[in-house]
Image (cartoon, rainbow, N blue to C red):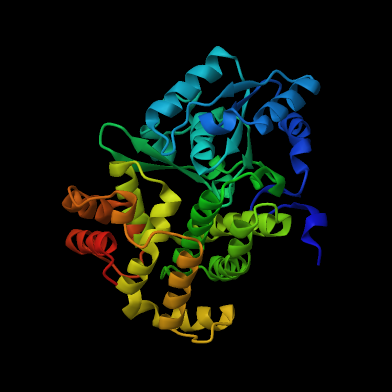
Length: 385
C-alpha cells in the first residue's frame, strides 16, 4: 500500500490530520479553533528554517496575525515558559501553535496552559489549581518523530532551581488539532532521526512492560514497536523516504498514547541525567534502554516472549529482544555508554536519588530504590550489561 498517498483524518486520541502536505491546512485549523492571532512556539534552530516562515506566511495570507516565539531550549525550562507567556501577552495572541520537536511542543503546551491562570506553573502540577476555561486553543505540528508530545496530556519542564524535570499534567493539555506531515521531518539529520526514533521506541517499550492494567495501551505499544523495527532504519538511512517518515511519526504518536499505561526506569534515569547534564532526552533513552531491560529481566520474561514473536525475531525471548535492541542501536550509530557522550560519575548519587523519586519510576516493571538506580546509572556509564 502506498503510504505516500495517504491523507487521512483521525479522531483518536484527538483530531489528527495525517499525510504529506497537510501543513497547508494550518491556517484553516487555526480558524476552526477560533484563533485570529496565534503565537507560533518553536526552538531557535527551527525558527531559522524556511518551514517556519512558510507557516507564518500561510497564516498571514489567511488574514491571521501570527507571532513567533523561539526561546525554547533543548530541555525546556520554567524560564522558557515564562518568557513565552510574556511574548504571548505582549503580542495579544489568542492561541498557540506548537511547532517542532518535543521540547518546543512541551513548552508551547505549558504556555497555553498557564498564560491566563492565577496559579504558577509549578502550582499547575496539581490539576485542581488550573481553570480549564482559561486555557488557550492549541495546535501541535511535530517536526520530529520521537516524543509524541503532540498527543500527550503532559509536558516535561526543567525547574532551574532544583535542576529536576517536573511533569505538568492536565487532561485538557492534549492539543485539539494535530498535523502529522512527514515532509516536515525530511530535513532532520540522521543522528537526530535515530535519537528521536529511539525515544519513540522507549515510550512504546516501557508502556508495553509496565505492570499497569491497560490492554488497549499494551496493544498500541506492541504495534508501535513493530513499526519502529521496520521503519526507523529506513528513515535514518534515507531521510527522503516519505513512507518511513510518516510511519515513524505515527509510531511516535502511538508511543505517547500508549504511555497512559505508564513508563519506567529508562525515563526515570533519563529525566535525572538530562536535567543535571543537559543532554538530549532521546539519546539518553537510547543508551539506557538495554541496561534497564536487564535490570527488569526477572519480571518481563513473559512479555519479551510475546514481543519477540510479534516482531518475528528468530529468538523469541528476552535474549532475542535484547540482542535486537543492541543490534538496532549499533545500526543507528547510537553510543553504547553514557561516558561516550561526555557524562561522568560526579553526580551518580544524586542521579540515583532523583531517579527513584521521578514519577515515571512508579510504573517501572519492578520497583528500584535510590541505590539500585545509582547502580543502573553506573552500569550505563561503564557499559556493564
